[in-house]
Length: 327
Image (cartoon, rainbow, N blue to C red; front, top):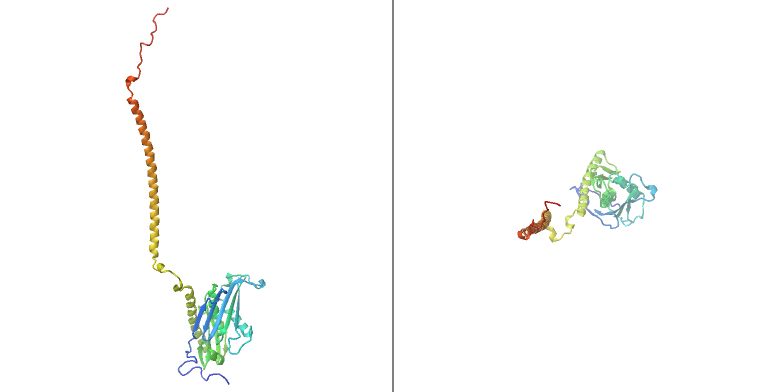
């Protein structure tokens, strides 16, 4: 007995889960969930639950795989054995290998691999619970994990799928729509709208394909806004900055002015000290000069005080006169 519903869209334009044809499922993202990874992200999209981890850039071994001019991106998509109702065989299979290849190629145009020649960037996407659209959910989680790891990129990658049910194009397929729909078109885009991944399973007309691209662009823009908000919440959330109550009301301009005033006062005090020291030296020199002058004046006064009578006068009588006549 088939579980295919009779109608995917009711007369009110609502789908099986109550969404409009251009609405995506509720999404929850959280980054930095793994401490041992360089970057990580946990994503819930509808009933999908995906964990992505990034390791690197680091040296690539064996060295024969290294690229001399760029880094190598390795992407591993895997579905856990318990992720679906019927247990699947663990390990890689043809489907996971194909999804890993196209997902890696979706990131190659935006990751600046030329900055890390000879290195490798490992991306692991583990699907813990599957509910249609797991490859696009893994790409969204991996994009945030790369950003969380600080890998230089031109922009984030956002992915979404468009399908065809009941003759209408719908955005973000759920499990019944994916299993029993007429077409499934997963896409991945850059923030500028450049398509880096495009696959299709089913038949659509040219007009339906153009409509699918426009719907997917709108869905990727919504996802990109949520990705950016997730990054802002971690790296620029002011509430996470711990500040004491005293530091909250600190006026920075007042601190700068007080610092300038204190520096000017220090310079003024230094100049004053220099002036005082110079004045003291001048006073000492003046005092020494005054002492010398006073000593010279005292000596002159002492010479003037001497009585002139005490100075002996020349006496001519004591000098014998020569005889005028000689014998």
